[in-house]
Length: 366
Image 1: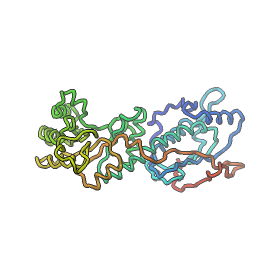
Image 2: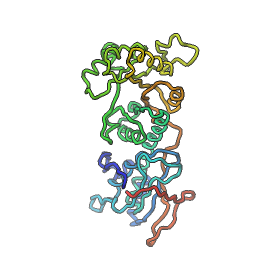
Image 3: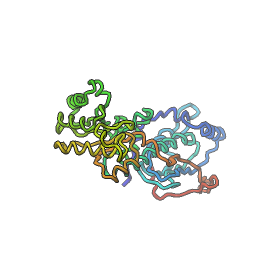
Image 4: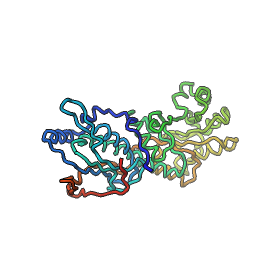
């Protein structure tokens, strides 16, 4: 049974601009123009690959670009769609790939899709970076929930595709509705510092107002570092809200030492959200009968830092991760090469030196 793909309409592509080559490198637009003016219609096989061990993202988005934007303008200015004249095979979003493994092939009249190389490679690169980083973060979390909270670190127009890329790689929560749009969910979040400030710095009051006015189906997660007293504020919120409090989020700045650690200098790095702070909060909540209250840790978490917490058995229930989804040392750029030409009904090898065809039996017809 064929695995489902996202409907091209969901991507809300700027179709007319893409057809016109507005988002394309000029040399691809000029290649199309030359072929059109010369009346040359080479039938090619294009091969797409990346150089990294990766989790693929952006495949369905790239296919949508080809489906909706391949073709040519007729002499009367109307658009002649090209998708039906292409033969495309591709892997799926969320698939793991090895370096140089072929992830997509496109066969057909090159002039129909030459202008699309820049945008389809771009979405593959962007989303694969997010998906691969998400895989590493999820793996480090050792089965615990990972929340995708990086929306504030980049342009709003990338939120939807980035959220989906993280989702297919295993991140289970996102912070904006845009992040969750493609799979029909909603953004989640905690009581923010700004709401606490709006209620005069009273975290308990702000959290109670959150619980009072927000849909009862939404988990109430109190942000408990406003007064730099995560233990005291966690207990105060738990006492005030009881079972309505789903969790507390520790977000202490990396330049601050929480009040509960002021007497603990000398044996560990006391700044920020550190293992001892988490243990102090857990012990305090359990000691007063609030074992149901979960602990969410945030603030500069990377795969390496999460792995350290997990190796030490730190009692974190979920990790909220931000900019680490955009980082990572791998190369996530994609390359497309013509590897063969169809001449007289048969395929003939034709490619740049070093870019031989690498057939991949995992590719599925689209």
